[in-house]
Image (cartoon, rainbow over all chains, first blue to last red; front, top):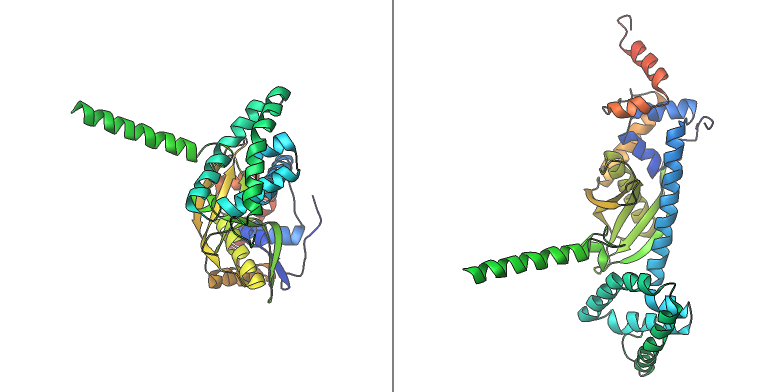
Length: 150
Length: 180
């Protein structure tokens, strides 16, 4: 249980505080007067919510960086992954067909990763198989392929 | 006739497989509108200047290809529903982002409900107008100042788990007492 939340209500209000008005206005008033009270179940729910939000944030960060699943698995965060990301953003992303290819890749790559993860032989084989793809992507980018402003 | 039946069956199977492909996996919860959108903000705080200042921490904001922003809010719940409180929260977030950055945020948003099993479901909600949010802010101020009587929830389940149940019962008894 925390102390009374007699914050300066006229100065600022958060979106989550305002959202409580849609739950119970009497509860909003009680929390303002007496401070927040949480039962053990509510605290457990809040902890579960915090954990889910952290995961959601991490997934978002991964999404923002771009998801080169297979390449990241076989090369780590190296120059090969950077080349493939540039290829995706500059060459594939501007065209409709390219975006379809990205979508199909994002949809199927996690399953491939699950299949080869923990199998060093398969990881090595995938590394060899991807080498010409990375080389080709690098050549296309070096010749000025795709968008320049990314 | 049998060829037509076979074609229809194959089409239905293809549609079902397409749906399965689109709405399963780690991005299965994501609405089609956001699949090709770019994530621009996550866990970021925005402030709408004014009295009172509205502050909001957003879960995720996506930019569509037309440049407009769409809000996404994650909720962990046992029941797969979006509530009025979600709509209010997202509406306040919309005002905070619009006034803080000057960007255009769409009047609809998505509530992603994550259940204890980890499964996620998405609900599209229509947001309140700026005027409605400002009115709600004013009403909150009036309730806290004692100028207006607060409304009670109609959700009985909420009352059963409320930690202020005894104070609320006392309050109700005083409010509806014949002497008052």
